[in-house]
Image (cartoon, rainbow, N blue to C red; front, side):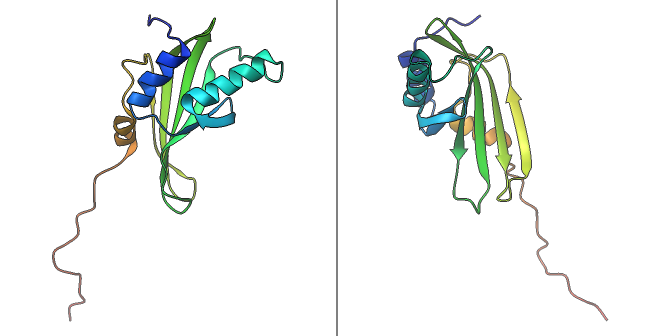
Length: 142
């Protein structure tokens, strides 16, 4: 089992792996990874939120080019015990501009160290297979 990491180390390792965008913790608290988690934990201390029974849910976009373009979204399920963090699972999903799921991958039995970088996670759901076009256009023959 992976050793649990404090918030600074946990956020630093994931940020170095390219997870440097904005995230939501438990569906709220938008911000950079460390800021989002810190804000959520602060709200828990103040009684505005409660700690989850299972894992913390972190969601964010790994690739976003606007609403009219396909996007890649990442969901991380993070175990939180006594102020320490451990990455359990990661889901990476590619959706088209209409919100339809194109491809989804779920990675289990992860640790912060073994988790893929953000670019590797995007590559898991990107289909680089381009349709081959015929060299000569189709024509009607008489």
